[in-house]
Image (tube, rainbow, N blue to C red; front, top):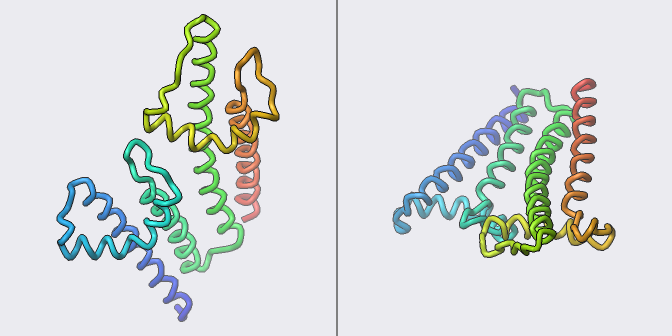
Length: 196
C-alpha cells in the first residue's frame, strides 16, 4: 500500500468517526444534555461547521431538524467513494453510479411530496365539486413543508398548464416529469452497471 492508499484509509477512518460524532450529537439532542459538559461542547463545535450551513438551507419539518440527515447522506456518499479509491476499484463509472444513486433517492423523496400535494389538490377539488369547500391547513408543519418544498416547481408549471374543470394539475404533471426522469436515471444506471 502506497502513500495514496494510506491517505485514503485515513480519510475513510476520519469520515467514519465524523459520522459517529453526528449520530451521537443527534442522540444526545433527544435527552437534552448539559450544555456545559466538555464532551457535548466538543461535539457541538466539531459538527456545527457542517450542520449550521445545512440548517440555514433546510427548513425544519414538524420541529425535526433535517440537517443531520442530509449531512449523514453526504458523508456516506463521500465515505463510499473514498473506500472505493482505497480498494483501487474506483472508476469513473463507480463514481457516477454513487452520484446517480443519491440523486435517485432525493428525487424519489421529492416525488412522494408531489404525490401528497397532488392528492390534497384532488381531495379539495372533489369536495368543492360537491359544494363543500375544504381548506388545506397550512398551520400543520408537515403540510407546510410539503407545500414549501414543492412550490418552486409547481409555481413554474402552473401558468404553463391548463386547469381541468378547475383542478390544478401542475403537481401531478411535475410528478409525471420526475417519474420520466427517474426512468432515464434507471436506464443510465443499468447501462453503467453493464459496462462497469
